[in-house]
Length: 332
Image (cartoon, rainbow, N blue to C red; front, side, top):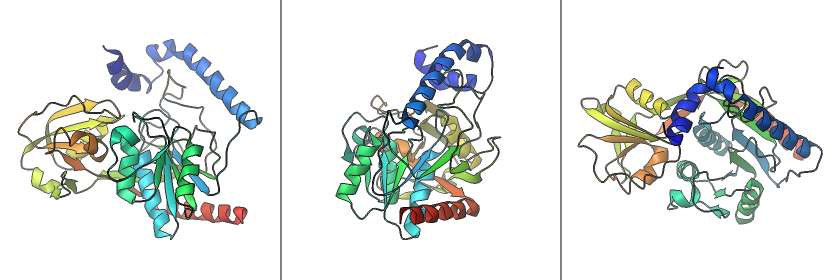
């Protein structure tokens, strides 16, 4: 088994149980845990500084490695804040990009320059979005370019303590905390439980508390030219599907739940760049995620991108609005 296959396919399965391989990795997990604790202590003691920016900062993240629904949650959150009349901006590290500077994301930006997830968020919301390895630098650059922004949503970054935040939203999927061990023996980036302002479940995680949200595919796919194709029109034939996600099988399962017949599935590592995609694969329709589309379309312009939508229960939005109101009062 190749190192890549072990990391992306086998290790996530190891993290679900406290089996032999997980136990072999425990000494490394203990060392990692000691470093996490030391870093947290350094911030708490003031040895490292958390920088605050003149805006309300909401971090959307998770405590486990791999996708749990942060990006659709960020999109839904931004759209909700906009509906409340707030001026919103988004910052992100831009994972998977080939650049290292701090820069804005535009509608015609390339995924390799800004990252696939930031590009998707900007295309879905239209709000100002900056990427930067240091989130505080990205936030300051965004506010300098858009001083009207009052709320900054940080896509990922729950563990990025260098940026001070007002609210933390932790997203969990059906894996919950896995076997409950830290990386690499388990999926945890930091010990759980830990204090967060709001916990949002995008699957039956088994972790108590918080609110529920549902992830589902849209009823249509989108062509490279923007035209929409109802998924209903694809049910009479077999299709191929590709996904470069942390958990590509989840996308394939949702396609099948939508009534589609998948002749071939291609699971690729998260943030795959598609540079080596073959010019032709088959005559069957090819479905991909919105996150993959901008990278895949230059090589497969016939591919159809299927949007992923998130719907959270009303209690989540009510709790969030109440917390934001409290923070505004504290800032006043």
